[in-house]
Length: 213
Ligand code: B12
Figure 1 (cartoon, rainbow, N blue to C red):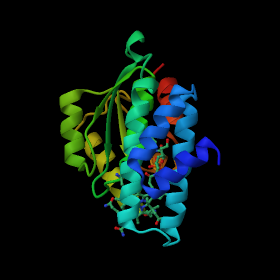
Figure 2 (figure 1 turned 90 degrees about the vertical axis):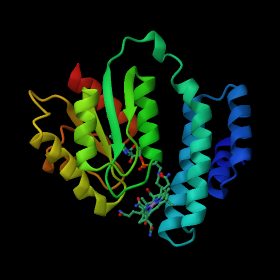
Figure 3 (figure 1 turned 45 degrees about the horizontal axis):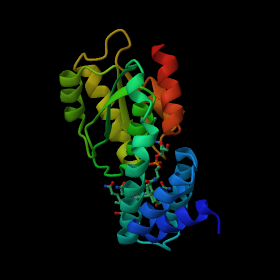
Figure 4 (figure 1 turned 120 degrees about the horizontal axis):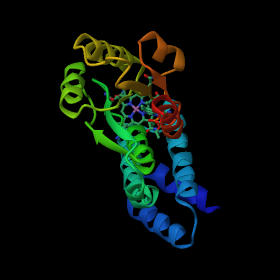
């Protein structure tokens, strides 16, 4: 079994200690953090499929999610290591929208933006439209990022975008609003008045870099 497959298997089986030990040893063996991440993501993909097929249930999926977070924490310092040398590119305010508690994708977005020289303010999960508005007032971000993983929380994303506009907080095209998450599409992003859409965390970084360059 390849190292990537073993990493994936630990995620699927929710083996926190084992995944941390393996991540550490593969990094010590000079496997790149990006390759390790790809192996871990492979595991989450299988979890997603098994969940959909009712081959895995919520408690097991939660354990896999916790395992993924534990593994990501080990990658964080490596992915973010060059960040201090960079001039800050902008401030991203990031949250998962109201009704939604999925946060693994958001964590990746947070890490990728930090790794690329952005300051990230993560306001967590289940963030209401009003809480987004308050946070925009408080932190004055250059970019607002919203994540939604459930089809039925996509309207909350629309409400958050509308609330920011209604509060008069998006003037002259700033802050840029970027949305993402498995059910979100570029078309939906346009429809709700978001500026940008990223299919994944890295694409999100590229979209934002181009938009605020
Ligand atoms: C893990 C998981 C859970 C965990 C979450 C734990 C946690 N801490 O996050 C738990 C068990 C709690 C959970 C609960 C539920 N879940 Co769930 N869950 C998943 C699962 C298996 C994986 C999600 C994940 O972490 N993927 C890995 C990450 C890396 O991917 P990602 O989040 O998509 O992020 C990537 C991109 O989307 C993007 N991205 C994400 N956000 C953003 C934001 C920006 C700005 C940008 C640019 C990019 C971006 O970048 C990331 C990659 O780089 C998915 C299956 C799937 N295929 O997605 C189901 C899934 C999302 N869940 C689902 C459901 C139905 C539920 C529940 C309603 C189940 C229930 N009956 O209670 C509850 C809802 C709870 C709630 N209110 O939110 C459905 C949603 C169906 C739908 N379309 O509405 C899915 C698709 C499973 C399925 N096939 O049925 N879930």
